[in-house]
Image (cartoon, rainbow, N blue to C red; front, side, top):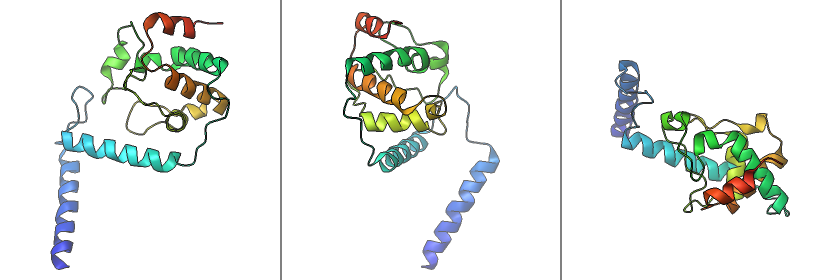
Length: 165
């Protein structure tokens, strides 16, 4: 037990030492240390699954109207950071560390209840804002529907789907 206490004190003292030394580079021009990146991503995933547990998507989630409304909202609020097919990443997206995920990639899962929670609540220590402060649940669900439906979408279909009404 005493060895555990000594190890805990050393770990805390080391963490405080690193914090006050300023040695850890927090600039957005370099990526995280791989261990720090793993810890942050694992923490994010565990938190997401815990806090989004029990969220049920609306029965009419995947209607054409919802997907189209979500596409327009994506174009207006998400494309700057997350990109769109056939378009270069914006200067803002190029400066975000960690990089914002390319949400329309064919390899994405984009589980609607998980996407709803992230969009509504945002993610600390990333550039992901909490859109629940500016968008109602209906709009966030529509965006979640679009993100699920549009995985792997090509540029011409994206342009048609997200065109202003």
